[in-house]
Image (tube, rainbow, N blue to C red; front, side):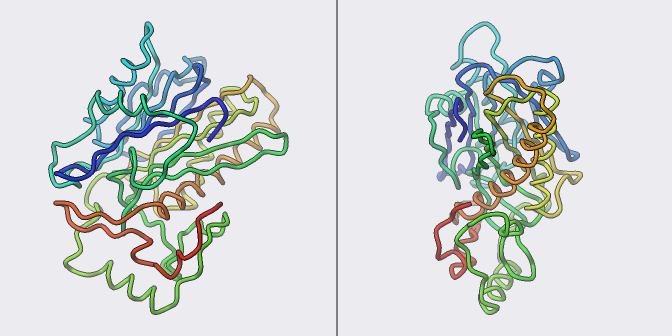
Length: 320
């Protein structure tokens, strides 16, 4: 993802479970910021990331709604030390595995932290295990953008969206034009068949009547200050709006953390470049989450993935 960062996942799928936790771990406490939008966030310790606040030792993204924030306790335990700063945000995935009380706890956070490494698994793993969108299975996705000076901006998005990620006219992801995703435009007949399947009366609701949230992290090794990092988090929310419609609703708790692993810097041109890249990377990460997701059948019902609904569009390898 980004030099100086590791990512770990824990998930449990089956036997009444469909949920998980993802931990983003900097090698050293990192400058951090956050942007929270929507009417129903489930977060922890975001006040610590105010201007002049503390550096973050880890960021936790988790399922389980407010109950799942307990996963951060396990990360605190795993980190040790006097008082680790571990902000967290949760999505609503309660009951999607069939048993409403099955949700991440401190042991889940500990396990996710213990698996952290430089490679980032995508799809129905970690906090993306129980994620859905308005139509289909969601997940977790990653993307990055290289900056002119050699630095990188990366994004990690947990797509559990009340809104749609699809262009209703074509069936392509809304942000498909922002990267080389290896997609073909679905044939009209394939698109019509997918729309019919999504409108079938026996299809389980993917959560339109429940709180839904997109959460994630953008990070960079470019030199930025807290103001620039805060703008990057806000820019990632704009990227979310390019890939999902609508966003930031009354039942959404859309939350994006931002981390900087490089030196402090206050060049406004650098900050603007980081923000533009954060917007693009987050939008691409949403698409990757959708393309990497796989269909699942639980006590909640069958939730189809994009690749099941549009097999003709996804014959190429995802890039971007």
